[in-house]
Length: 199
Image (cartoon, rainbow, N blue to C red; front, side):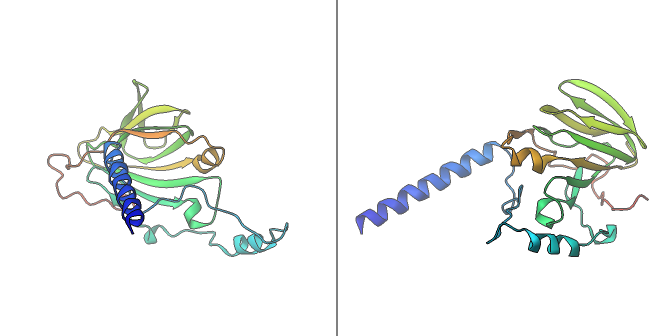
């Protein structure tokens, strides 16, 4: 009995230690995030996986996507290993509130942003890069970066495509949030509600 209590106490202490460490690194997800999906078979053949892949949707309806986070930077995942469509690409749609900014972060994988509308800039490893609708922004590997909407009146929107799952599968797992995204809305835009479609 004493041994069981000791094990419980050690596990509990370890759990709270990890929680404190995670809180130093930024806001943890409400549930575990799937970065790379397992692929299993009782035989050498992957025929069942091929059958499953042939049945997944080929069109993802924008009206079914729900933006989350905020109040300045909003995101919705489009293509991730969780959706069981691709193990190589990760795509998401982002909206920056008028005058808003994202978190400052870095990761091993490169990323490509296609700017749908708006104007703003990036800071990549301390260097500023301006962008506007129609531009493609490339984030290099291992670059600490942050996104800014320079328009005080209109949101900026982008599609982001990256090969994050492939990098993580190869154990290139270094990624960190350097500065959390803002917790307060941009002054004058307290009621900003992002939409998937441009206004």
